[in-house]
Image 1 (tube, rainbow, N blue to C red):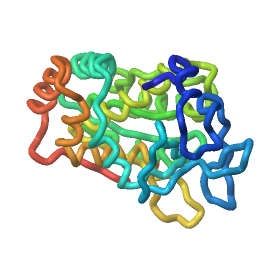
Image 2: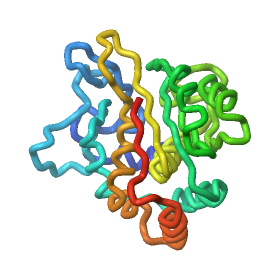
Image 3: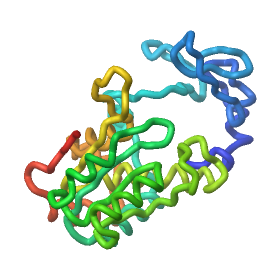
Image 4: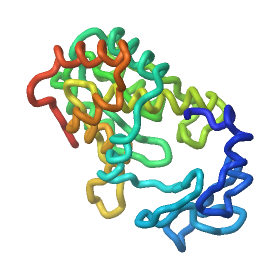
Length: 254
């Protein structure tokens, strides 16, 4: 499901854990809580989560959180893409048409020192390079350094430097969600993938959940192939990318 508006009325009829969201699952507002170090329901102050060790009889369990860590890939073992998304991914791969590099940068709500790292990549990164990022300024800088003709992107970004997940005015929910999923998978299907650390006051290396998930998918090709499903488009994607791959795809963390 990529657009909750399509099933809004149905969502509000479901039994839910946490129960405070029943009847308003499609419209609840998450709010960050320093006390819980996570999101709570703005109306009730109840954490939007559940005990992962317990079974539940509810129709739907809601865990509104961040920081998927390396465990987030486990969810993808249980999911398969909608056929329409696999078809769009096939179009992307056919559009690229040859082995390619990929780089992910997050630089809106979180910042990164991406410019010197992009400069360092120039001349060594596999061309063409697919860029997955939330910042139009970052994308334009990549085009300047690598050359506009060498940079590939498919997603639409807002003119203002604001997080895609909180900017609901420039694209529909379906478009924002599907493009994020497609950017993740395109990165994971690349021959060389680069992730760039976020800024931290303590100077420790810290990467976005998106960056890590793309890398983990690249490392776990069985999960990636399973996620694509068994459609004709999935078969084309696997055949093309397999023909391009080296035995050990490149994974670069700066």
